[in-house]
Amino acid sequence: MLELSPPLVLLSGPTGFGEYLKLVDPKYVGGVILKTVTLHPKKGNPTPRMADGDFYVINRIGLENPGIHAFIRQIPQLSIPTIASLGGDSFEEYLEVSRIFKEVSERFCGVEYNFSCPNVKEGGLSIVEDTNRWKNLLNEIRTILPNTFLIAKVGIEGVFVEKAAKIVVDSGWNGITLVNTVRGLHFERGHMILGGLSGPLLKPIALRAVYEVRKMYPDLFIIASGGVYSVKDAEEFLNVGANVVGVGSALFKNPEIVEEIGRYLLEVKG
Amino acid sequence: MEKFCLTKKKSIRINEDTWIIIFEEYLDFLPGQFVMLETPKLVRKPFVLGYWEDNLAISVQVKGKGTKWLVEETRKVKGHGPLGNGFKKDGKGILIVSPTCLTMVNAFRKKVNVDVLVGSKTPVLVPLEFDVVVGNEEFLNKISTLPEYDWYLVSGSKSMEKVCWNHLRGKNVYFSLEEYMGCGIGACKSCAVFTKNGVKHVCTDGPIFRGDELCWS
Image (cartoon, rainbow over all chains, first blue to last red; front, side):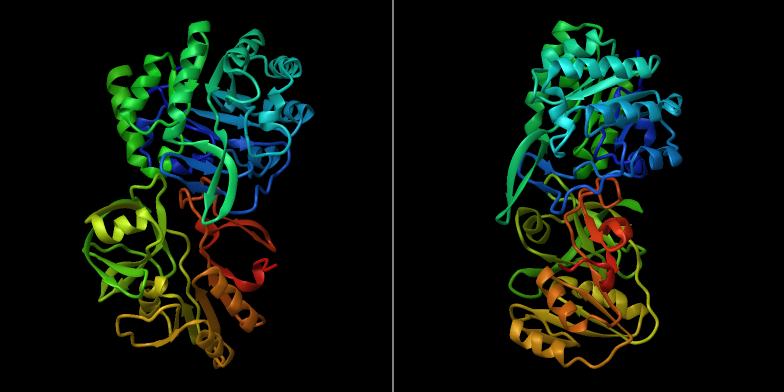
């Protein structure tokens, strides 16, 4: 089992490649999940790429990243446990990116696979639609990376989280991140933005997902992701069974919130 | 870069929707740099740094509840910065700006030799010691009859940028860009700019870019 102290991680996406550790004291964070890296570099989507409503943030970054080869040449040297995040545009790309990642896998305490990005045309969210094929993919990745702590990040679309969790467990994976952003639509001064919703609006959905999956799998490692903006939010996720709580868009509001949550978790959880 | 809490000293109305906020504290910054400030909204917003009446100051265009809160309600504001790259050029330049950049103008005037042209859609309510034109037609006339400068820096709305590029292309023209930002530090990748040299980001590569590097289509 992965032990992170405090049980608080900066989530993939908003965290970038660790830039936020300039604003959040690393002693209050148990780990960082880096931005998703794909086989080939991605330019990402045209702007506007983000907007904020009253209770949510919506983004359509489109997985902008330098690609796995450039990533490996310049792996961020961070002072706290680091989890890589990998994604792909197809079944084959997930496998290829895993093979390339294998040579550096020991430099990370785990790897999270992004099976739920709503902002790319191929791969991402659509990869879980065919559950048999997705299960094959998880098995093949496990074969490529037999000793790596493998975490699947899933959303609430494409497949029920309970079913996704069963596939993750049956494939010999170690953990699951619940939940990724949910597809949404936002009007910004008349301009339509189709993207993934995060922020406080997502919290009840993520809480329910963690609750349901924990009931089924007492030993599965669960990273909670969705609308954590306060100590109370973090407590609620731990109460429904999360091993680790993640913060994402709260970083955009105030990095000090993250320190406050981390300080609290250090006191009560160590 | 540092985390800070600024105290508002006063707000001054500049035109119909733009205000200058003067702070009690000082920050060390280079002309062109900006800060991310927290409001009741979920995401901090970028504001270019400058001076007004020799105090640290920002210009704020009231667009919604976050900027309204900054101008009218709060006394303290949290943030982080300074961010982005400073801008320095030799020779005589001109700043072509909207009222939302007036404080930035004063930061430049302390460091470089510049003239200033302000283009405002509505009448400016405070006396300014440089050229001010009101309305699109007067702005167009002024831009098309500008004397030669060693460099030009444009900071305003996207429509102002386009008009200036159409009249000044081929010259040494720079643009201080604005894109929605989540972090201001290069993490979130929301403030992308598709340039002739690939994807760049306003927060870490800018905010000031050469005009001939940008894709104008």
